[in-house]
Image (cartoon, rainbow, N blue to C red; front, side, top):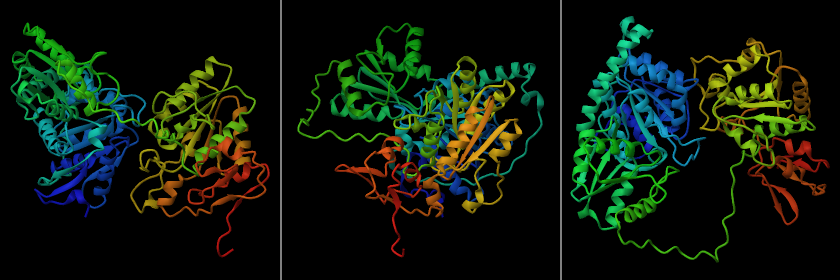
Length: 619
């Protein structure tokens, strides 16, 4: 039995934040779940996927976040509790649905997980998705700890049903990927089937209907504001005249700082866990008891702006600060030491931080830049692209995935990136306004997610570029989740369809389509050369399984290579490929046999044919 299905209320379990969220949803009776995988939210979906294999929970990896929210919207409006999981930038993709779903509302609870990523550990921006609450008119709740995340999910579902609106459950990486001892609650029986009752004048959002629905949304927002005032997740501790308002993981840093600075008797804290709508009356009452207030929040000055507005409404003139050059930054994550330092500075507390140890005699830590795995087929494809394009002036638009790392030397394949699917659209723009040869690179999962419309646009508008689709048979970057092109039979899962990338590309009218096996280097170079010389839209589909994925399926028959005495130390293998299985000992190039997967790409580019397969013991 999956550990999150254990129905033992009170039992304590060490859980990752994402496991705690998934457990909270199970306890709340969630029956329908969907996602497009994205760190830091991916483990929530992984647990749902695993649980769905041994229970009546429905789970799907949707093609993108917009679709994921749409299937959940239908389920929730048929009376089935649903959860839609995505990372913060995924909400951008789902926003078209989100904004109008707020008008339509839901019948059963629908919780939308937005996993924000301060410091951009695995993201292209660090946007603060609390503003989606203001933009859409939907409630937002956000936990401060792993354990609180579990119980707050139940609250979010109940709140959603009370308001008949989706609820945004906002987390940050520090909550998603921390661990804590969590006391389990009781699992509620799931209701897996429902019924949709036709009501087109409340469900079909033509202008005449939407005008009335907007009125309903604003009334629901007024009700949500009242709920925020009395929410158990908005609370005040302490009785001092120095006020601190905080949220999320910052609450823990504030509590630690107050103890470290010995100011418990002088400080009061307002922790905001129900952050949209903000609890105006609670905040105004809090401000009236304070001489000055500090807002501690990662990201944007979301609460700071609201608190200052509430103060102005009541004519309060106390000093309220948060973001500033001398205080908190809008950049990156907070940490306990930084929060402690800012609190001490703001309230004029004499505080001497711990001395920084003298590390001048300690050697610098070697840098370990991110790199494609040993034997990664993307490396072989990038090498082939670079060789095929020699002598050409090129622009290479790339996309979101493992292959984004191809922009780093020595491969240096990738010049422009905005978001998921942007490689195809931007390639079309470059092709129309420059005279350079344009190459677009996109992964298989990303192609299904948001690359197809750009390709259709390119065919229709007669753009001139080569699209390289890196088909490694999985969504590799976020942990090998399936996508519509995956052969689910390999995972011993039945009942799924499978979409052929080749058939899809040909069906939209691409005139030149080539399939390559990137480990066959010379043939791949020749095929790419032909595509690059073609005038119009051409597509290369580079097919080779992700080595880690193949290994997990016991399909990787690795036979390591070694560098023989024929080596003349040209180091083409290192300078052109940068495979992490290579290392230099003395002045000799060597291959780590424990890392090498036997792709043989290096052997094919060695001018002396000095790279050979290790003999098996039986050879």
